[in-house]
Length: 245
Ligand SMILES: Nc1ncnc2c1ncn2[C@@H]1O[C@H](COP(=O)(O)OP(=O)(O)OP(=O)(O)O)[C@@H](O)[C@H]1O
Ligand SMILES: Nc1nc2c(c(=O)[nH]1)N=C(CO)CN2
Ligand SMILES: [Mg+2]
Image (cartoon, rainbow, N blue to C red; front, top):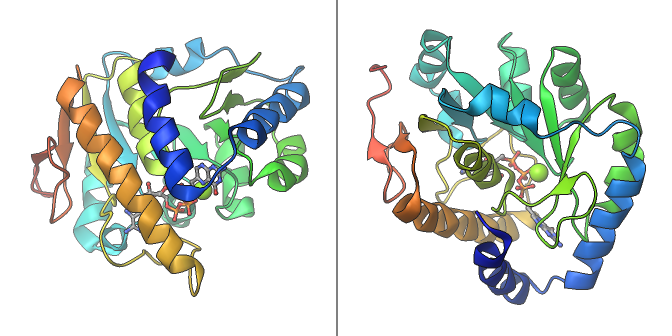
């Protein structure tokens, strides 16, 4: 999505959650500086995604359903984009994500294992994760930087807010043939592989609402075929029985 088309949606999110554009921009600049010598050309993402069937794996409760794992295993040839906490689930089940979308609050050991297994890491900078950027970015060999504000050198804005919906925007941006959502329940309950518990849970739900709205918006203008295996598919995504391809 073009930056000018994305920015009004960012403004809505910024106002709803009380974020600071200046802090988000500063985070992008910090990440840019940190990855100068090891930033990947986003063409590597295009190569993985263009014309391919993509599965975007989120950390919702349905991730633990037996049929979800079966679906992922059955569709071996699909390119797997894993959102943060969902990386741990895949690693535990010996599945290598192809692309990881993270703002670095997922399980750090799993994120590193995913990179070692060959995943392209798409690391998101925002005003509230600069400490994590400083801690974890040095541990990655190569990565693509992302931001929700103005792009800066090696740090791109593909659109989207939460890790999961940013994964979908990424797949759309690079011309996926088909995008199937798995574990992207966006509902009342938060999955086990999601770290947000206790007092953070309410904020997490609010963030997921925002992510879901963004996907409903994207669906209206998407060039990819869209499907969702969860019980309540996102509006604009075709329901897909998990036992089908
Ligand atoms: N019910 C759900 N519970 C948890 N994650 C969900 C759910 N539905 C969809 N997701 C997607 O799965 C992604 C990965 O989940 P996880 O909880 O690990 O993310 P997170 O790192 O806390 O998210 P973010 O940093 O984007 O807030 C989320 O970003 C969200 O897009
Ligand atoms: N400034 C800021 N931006 C974000 C944040 C956040 O906590 N702060 N969380 C996100 C997804 O969890 C995505 N973007
Ligand atoms: Mg995260």
